[in-house]
Image (cartoon, rainbow, N blue to C red; front, side):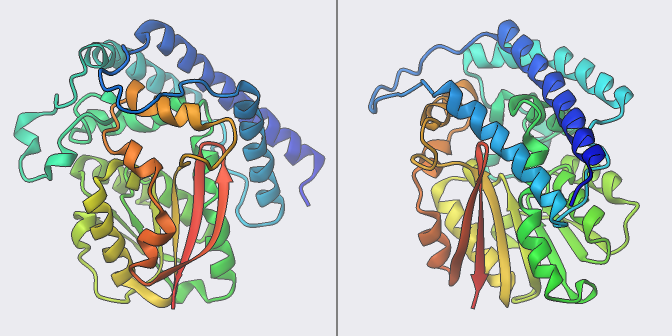
Length: 345
């Protein structure tokens, strides 16, 4: 059971975090403005969301996060409030880049990526998701990413990611973590994988990502831990043996994949997973998941460049992974995200 002091510490830390990133969200929205509605009117739009539902969902996330800490699923984050100097640097980079993002959004330019660095990558990957500068193909983008995502989710991004630690904790408790292996597919900057190693330091872990720039940042973040391997690879062809991983995690990847590619990646995840192993999947909510929030989901791909989001938001994920031999065990919601756990028989 958490002490009153730790509860107060969590409230102060998370409250400060939300205030910092929400202020950046509001200021960025004022500076950047909104994009014009798309010309495609083939389906009705519902750009309204229930404000009370959004606030209550955010509150529920933080209450669940603290309950998980109290239950011992994971430790209180040591960087719940990041270093002030790090925050200041992130803020400076964020606002310096914002005019470029605004210009790109206004013109709906989404292929503004470094030409010399884009060769060899799939076509669907060579674009500016979120209208962010240089896509996923530069060190600059990798430095901006975590701050941008926390601003987008008003300080709740880490708390949403942490919900994936609960099924990992339950699985690890039933095994000797020294004999387990975990693969984080599309590890990005390594933020989630650092949570894994913070809580399960003897769990052999591998991060896989298609961006060499994000992977380098991940390597720097995770270098203090042993038993961490980084793989520069496409999730469509995971360079691992069949049935080699006890746990596979996949955080915020599938909404950025074309439908055909999702099937391929799902098959690869199932292939490398051991019988008895689990997939812990975290991604955006889908239509109909939470009353009052569909409007936000409908707005997201228009305000930000997310060309495959609409199809993701309507996809039957249980069926997608079920066709690859994985059985859905649970589904939980975390603010604007959902956490699914699948097992392999």
